[in-house]
Image (tube, rainbow, N blue to C red; front, side, top):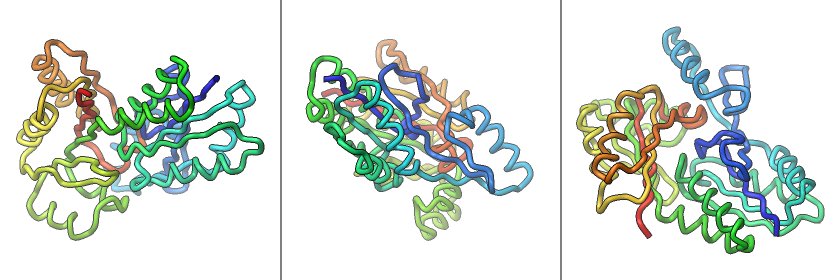
Length: 282
């Protein structure tokens, strides 16, 4: 079979970054302006624009999922290009309506080939690694269901952990409640957060940035050395690179990429954020 692998831009992948994986962009809204994540608004342009908005006390960005029609068009093009099976792998359905739009988009197709949908219950590179696992399995001759299972297995071994400089962005985006937001502000925390079972959960509550970075490192290395790590940041490259170097040194020189977070993630976590996707050994 020729199996197509599809994901979304909350994977921190950009279109064309990995041959064989199609990335459907989520949308960024700056007031009345609407951009396609990573397409009509690049990562660097987003963070520069966010800095200007903050300086001018302007309207902060919001996000929305791709429409079912956008997914239908992507799927149809892949089918027209020869795909006789599709695996669509996405950010947690509890954090975004993207997976639901993907399912609806597939339902709009006529004579659709076999489909499989994977809710990674995560975000960022954890989603990307799951998509890569599906692609590798499909390239090795796996069926749609087998390749989807390979993606789920990697998603199950992955963690998405981060700390934020402020909870304001998560609260505005509806990812945490007002009481949790207020408690964080009153205690002046840099909370360490993890996506667990598809939802954002407090892991620890350090009060300084240095302690937050130290505790993030400890979480990456717990309970044992990871198989794979990627460090993401929101305009905090120096801290991210220092953390990546620290992880690499502890893991026998493992390559630890440092990635500027996608706009659709940055809109919810804000500047100063540092996070990690961690793949645990099987």
